[in-house]
Length: 456
Image 1: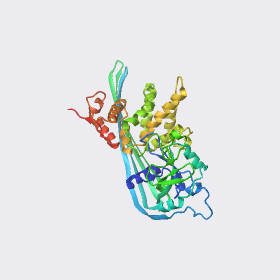
Image 2: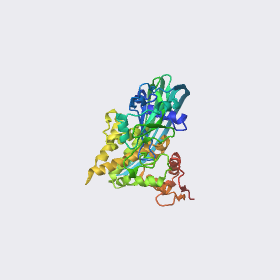
Image 3: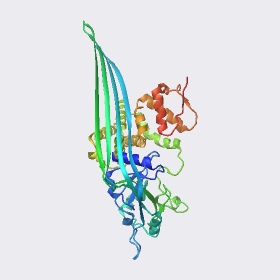
Image 4: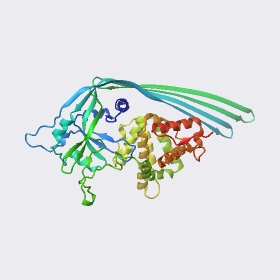
């Protein structure tokens, strides 16, 4: 609930994209001005960076200065930020029907489900605290970092990690409530026609409905950090550092050999792609295509189970984020603690991990690692979608529709600029008006125009 509230707040108030929403109430005590923030870039272009506060400030990792040096205490400016309250949520519908014929009966089952979530957020008057960047620059320009400090060493060891300094934070001024309302309504109808032995035919119709509603409230204390911004550091091998006033320019100097050193002796580690360079979608997708090859050759039952589990996860935004976090830890070689998860989240996560773990044949460890990587990529892409886009995708999870969407995405990535006809192979399923509208909506939430034209 807290993470959803902070994301909504940042989305509404920061169109420039400089503020970072706080993901957990447990983190707020460590988010002080001049705190160090580790920003970890992901390997895929669609993934948002991860931010972590190790609990140290910039002053904690500086080498002891000369006697008489001024302590690192730049001017802090305080001001009112905004008075914020809002209500947001989404609605989802699900319809399914099926028929079953047996020797003695024809059975028809129809299931309809509707559910809505609504979150009411009243943060009241928010305050802003900001470090004077000029002062911070003047205080730190002749200082040197302790390169043996654990935070520096561990961040430097990760080629996708960048160290930054928290320079601005947005805080609550009074206790404020967050209320989450979930309403679910379902109908189940069944028609049974049975041939009764030597007696003719009998029929029965039964309809049932259920409705559940839950309200959960969360009290956010005063002086809770809701969002913050940072300035990245560019750190040289000798401990000298610069404040990067332009985003995505932080990193560590790397000197390995003369052949690998650029003209200025600096090699910036940016991960698998440069955040400041133009993106070639086709090239980026080609890099990832090998990860998904294993999924296409999985046994049908296993592939179907995995799809159903992912579809179930899409119904809950927080469950998607939880699963992404668990898979991210596993991909990094860590052992996630599932004990902190809610029971439903833990069951879904464990079911997916069990599927990944069921590998037969030669090179089981390699296959398991590749499968984990593929699932991680899918879930990270889900986590990067908007709430509305994720909801639409969840309604498009039948194999024929997914195959049609794959054709469209591949065509967009090819960059030909041509449009496809619904008469083309694999796209006929989208002639249904509702599916066509969902496809347009899904591409729209990704800010991409679907390469489709209707035929009459």
